[in-house]
Image 1 (tube, rainbow, N blue to C red):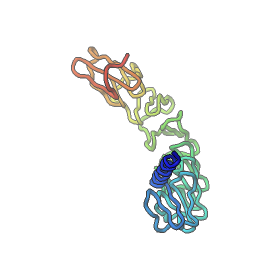
Image 2 (image 1 turned 90 degrees about the vertical axis):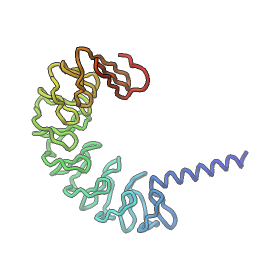
Image 3 (image 1 turned 120 degrees about the horizontal axis):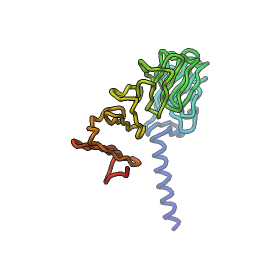
Image 4 (image 1 turned 45 degrees about the horizontal axis):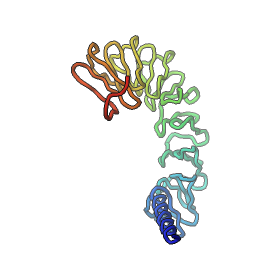
Length: 254
């Protein structure tokens, strides 16, 4: 019995080591590996990750991201900024997923949430610069990917055109509206009549003229159309066609 237990413990240990080594850094006595590939330049004696399970690491000579050297990074002052382990900074620069952000100021750089960051002059969506955004008035709207400053509305790094800022509001993470239009991921939903808008789900909309899914018009005959919605399944049909989204077997209960 002991031999069997020891055998399975040995197999588990080997498999765990292989799995961890192929996704993270594996620091050995005389070498360092990432994704089961040796990092030739790494110094194993001084090698360390910046945080547990971080993709960033350093030794006495270099800073690394996913096992590759970040040439511009300063070893002595490198530090991790966020708990999601995407941003780091040194005395000169800020990096996102191993790439230097050319305009970022490390002394004033701060995270707003999981997607947005700012410094004294700029606002960033991940690594992308929001050119027209004002960092002093910038805010994220309702835990979504929509944001605003004093003059503009944004979805991710895209500025919305012809939007009414005063009446703009977020319905759901990707869905929003103002007094004139409804937007899906920052794009106007064409031909949608806002006066008769019905939000059936955050992805599935209806007005007097048609149904819309993920911002796209379905071109249904409204006189003969009907729909059903389940937890994951959506079905809509008219006299001419039948459409299904995320469905398996059987109809869902309306």
